[in-house]
Image 1 (cartoon, rainbow, N blue to C red):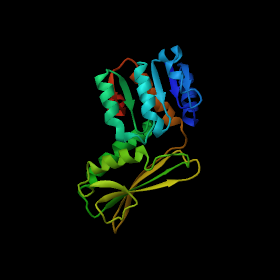
Image 2: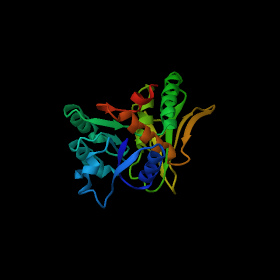
Image 3: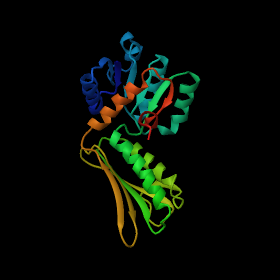
Image 4: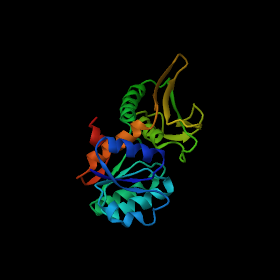
Length: 239
């Protein structure tokens, strides 16, 4: 498969390595130094799929340039979701292909499913307050993380006593409190905590490195090739 990589930071390098190890060809690498011209090249237009990990303020323009070149997108950037309906509309009306996940790690997506299952159980036990903590490296631009927002949505969908997520709220409110920490080079830690006067129940995902995210993105690209429409991890994983 011919792949384009948009965003050539640490994630981009890891994606390149894994893609090559899996026998794929990298036909185009786009970064800040060549973004003005690279989308219009024959090399980029020959890609079966583009994997995009850039920044929140460049993501939408990158997606539109991919659509214009008729190259399917696997989108890994977070922090732009207030415009996701715009991307869905372009994708649907223009018969384009777009795969979005807040986190491409297979382990994290298992964690998403576990989080929703636990929330369904805990809806019946109002003595437990639920909160979340997430930790990422100092270079991460958005807070809370896209992964934290997905986890929060899974909780809010299943726990009636919580109405919305918010940053640093008091535990006795109807808001789901998310505590965000940015330190060092932490790839990502997310913990869901249920606490009562009697005990604490918690589940946690702790990423050891970026390999899980990069592998998931390449797997998503393999799944996306030849498909149309707006896709996600649930389409690929079927759980």
